[in-house]
Amino acid sequence: MYSRRVAAFFQREGLAYTQINPLQAKRAMEDFRSRKNDVLDAEGLARAMARYHFAPTYQEKPVYGELRDLERTYQQHNEDIVRAKNRLHRSLQMTFPEIEHVLSSTDGLLYWHLVQRFPHPDAVLACEMDELTRVVMESTPKNMGLKRAQRIAGKLWDLAQLSAPAAVETDYIVKATTFQAQEVARLDQLKAATIVEMAVVAKGLSEVQILMSIPGIGEKTALCLLAELGDVRRFHSANAINAYVGIDLIQYQSGNYNAEQHIRKRGNAYARKIMYRAIINIVSAARYRPTRISAAYKRKKQSSQFNRTKKIAVAAMSQLNRLIRHLILNNEPYDKTAFCPEP
Image (tube, rainbow, N blue to C red; front, side, top):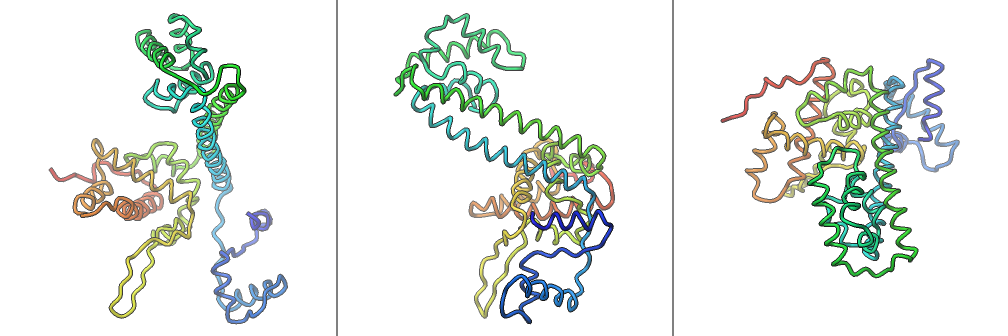
């Protein structure tokens, strides 16, 4: 982040500049640097540039930087909501642990609003069934049928009768549970608002629609992936994207010994995580919209004798990088009719 101010100055002044990562700089200066301080580093960088003539850095449009900042904010909200959910779970173990089983999932506004309204079983038992049903229907922005609301209210009542909490309703931890449920709901809304803002910023970029044309990649995945990869046109090959993401393979061989290959993991961890989830979504969507990526994933999965899901996914990620680069460079959407799966 510290180099962004200098890069922004050069861009505003219309000056070409070269930006290299610290590892590359260290290797370039190894021949003529025996000591390290700021003055020697500046001289070493100048000598390295004179010797190796690094190419000028590709200057992306400002919209890609804005997208990246928004996506990092989204990732921060995501990390915060994970911590908030863990705190909420710990509090509920003291106040009303059974409420976690009232719905099929402990995610969503309906569940978080129910926890805010009923952080303790006594709050449930103090209500009549009609009032419980009304609260359930008012706790979700979606349209809910009366019968489903009555089923949820009945289950909530049954769980409250079975509950034996460690705290009474007047204890502070009950108030803390309500606050934590409010915090989780607030962070979830911030995540959704960030994605909406990203969509507005990326409205003029054709890459979003190109990525969304790949079966299994929705708007959120496309926006986050584009934000982390930036302008794909700056990569000279798909292997360069692999190195940027950190899925390029490390090979070690000596004599008769061949070490098992593994990925370097020295690249963009956020992009690697998003791309891995994109592969899982592509594989899940293959039931109705198969692709070459999902077909290759399925073949390797079936032929593997061991549980190597992550390694197979990494190979699919490399294939996805090649596809993304080809589509964006040619400014064309994914052709869903180009692949005909075997019967």
